Amino acid sequence: MVLDNGVARVLVVGGGVGGMSLAIALRHAGVMVDLIDIDPDWKAAGAGLTLNGATLRALGQLGVVDEVVAGGHVHGGRRIFHSSGQLIRDIPAYRPASDDLHAMGGIVRPALHAILARRVKELGVTVTLGVTVERLEQDGRGVDVGFSTGREDRYDLVVGADGLLSKVRQLVMPEIGPPVFTGQGCWRAIFPRPSEVETNWLFLDPHRKVGLNPISEEEMYMFMLESAPGNPWQEPADWQATLAAKMRGYGGLVRELADGISDTTSTNYRPLETLLVPPPWHRDRVVLIGDAVHATTPHAGYGAGLAIEDGIVLTAMVVERDSVEAALEAYVDRRFERCRAVLEGSVGLGRLEMEGVPIEQQLAASAKLFELTRQPY
Ligand SMILES: Cc1cc2nc3c(=O)[nH]c(=O)nc-3n(C[C@H](O)[C@H](O)[C@H](O)COP(=O)(O)OP(=O)(O)OC[C@H]3O[C@@H](n4cnc5c(N)ncnc54)[C@H](O)[C@@H]3O)c2cc1C
Image 1 (cartoon, rainbow, N blue to C red):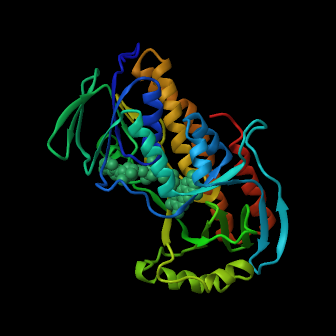
Image 2: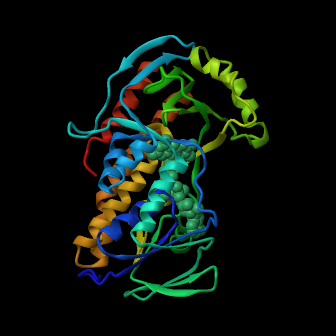
Image 3: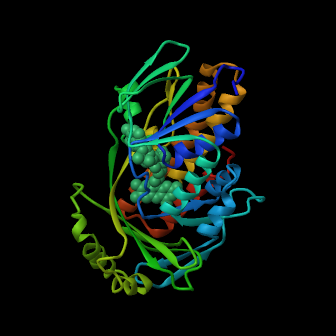
């Protein structure tokens, strides 16, 4: 199908959560989509993912929320503990809008990847793995693409959904600098879920934070955010032992879980880096979505959610507007403020954690961040 603005074929570079969501939305609109990913195995790292209410709403719009609920866990509310393990209080479920079905959830990343990838294939997207773009040349009516395999092709629109270190961004916006380290690191691990962990549990003291989040009937994932002055290298072979030692500084369930860590516990460490590309997010007919233009920290559990929303909004604009230029301008107009607010709120909360301000001040900043999801995207 050819849209009124002439768009018939789109290339999506990057098959992460953003690229796959865009591909699904474009196919729903009848547009032909080729999707490439540099990873020949097209795998997602094993860590858990928090899905806030807004993310679940967007997954509903893509038609996959029932599968996500079945493959993950939905819940609401938060239990707040002091890092010693003492319960401080319960915070009620937060729904972005009164008619939203789900307040919050979690899923293991490979499960979400499998759900989206299955849908992408069912909808007839052509997926090619182990390949990237080497050359993008535009003439106002289309984009000539040179692939790393030597193949050449021409598209009406090219979308860079290739993450934090986006190659597409480097090709069309070489002036944009690299992501910036925020000063914090994030540890993640997956544990069997005790039945009492039915919702998000947070263990706080002014300087550090551990969260437990159910991701299925059987499992939960844990994240630990901490200051990491000088961004020290954390040797992957030592991840389990290092994390267990840090967890022994906590009380309650976190302390108990430390004794259950073994060499086979799925564990991961990432220094937190952010990037916000100023508008516009396109150069002629090449446009960016997701972490390629707005990489945030996990404080709102919303980076993947923002990438999914980008795919939905970009598709809506491409379908509605009568020129590609107008569609891409409308897309960034709709997205920039929301992404900026989430990113700056998340980085700001991380800063409060590093400064060690009182827990109540941190919880107030966190509530403000959730409030941002209330606006429609
Ligand atoms: C520690 C940590 C915890 C997080 N926790 C959460 C959370 O709980 N909830 C949440 O919503 N978000 C979370 N996020 C954010 C979330 O992971 C990202 O915002 C999200 O994955 C961005 O999706 P994306 O599709 O833009 O990029 P990505 O998920 O990075 O996907 C990019 C894809 O592009 C491919 N690719 C890369 N380079 C190329 C290339 N040159 N050519 C072709 N393909 C390429 C990659 O293989 C990959 O498949 C977290 C982030 C971090 C760092």
